[in-house]
Image 1 (cartoon, chains in turn purple, blue, cyan, yellow):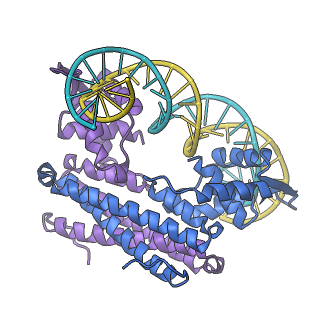
Image 2 (cartoon, rainbow over the protein chains, first blue to last red):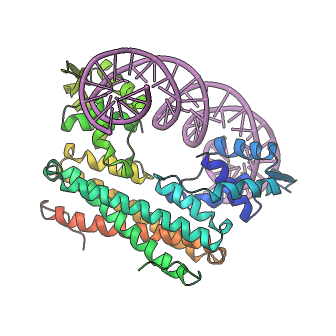
Image 3 (tube, rainbow over the protein chains, first blue to last red):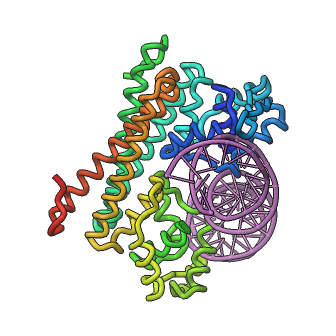
Length: 180
Length: 180
DNA sequence: ACACTCATGTAAGCTGTTACATGATTAA
DNA sequence: TTAATCATGTAACAGCTTACATGAGTGT
């Protein structure tokens, strides 16, 4: 929850930026997570500054409007760490997952792996629910429902495969924790 | 846009239901498209009735609260057809796509194929954008960004595969339209 | 005694978008 | 001349969730 606030804070933890920079950066990822409108982004930045989470520096532009560069402060890093360390909500959307994934440099490697494993569990549960839905007789009759569920299963399966592969890459870095 | 309204209308076009039924039906698909809260669903049903899109019948329950069964009316079918025949917005979310897919029985076979092909074009564009993002040097440096984009590419590829397979199934039913 | 399911509904609040305003600069 | 980019910001609105209210029945 309160996702945009923490997401922006997380982006600023990686690099100091202006609001306009953030919008530009997110435009490239807009398909996955959307890019926030100015009407939501700029108020968030001001709120973060008011609360002492970030500091601001005005860079007067030659030939162009002045830019307000925001830099994360100590309080902001603390707040962000607290948010990141608490587990993801059980029914997190794809968007919420990718947003947390993007902030993963604020995780330790272990926490990143934990995040991925949480997601794997969620996707597995989802997959199971969809397969149960397929089993219901009324579902088979309706082509549209079948298509939607078939689509869901395909997506969930692909996501699981990606999660497994990615976890494999990271499991080598971690000392313990191997699941047969 | 105004998605919930048309989505509910589409569900009622397939089968007459009460608001509670709709919630129960969507709970099984909640991972894909979420299930609306009563606070949004019930007002939509009343609005649809007020506008003459649906009719309502109260079924008094023995031992239980009376149920209000909503049935789509002629006006509702017209409105729904108009909405369905207009093309999907270019940056439609996964959720919006699945919602339209679920209503596909209101499409002709040809319109369903058109819907799938629109989506394929969108996913292809998305894939292209992500691959460009991968090519940027600063992206390679940041592990998190790389992971997020890698995830996006994996999902998009899987979706394209599903779309191609599903289109293949339907292309046999249609007379013309074969792309080499 | 407590909590849950069935079934509908209302009101407050959060989050986000759209549409606008500013104002200089540059390209068609 | 018109539009677009740069860059920030405000106000109005749309859409949805949460939390609550009702009230009978059913299970532990």
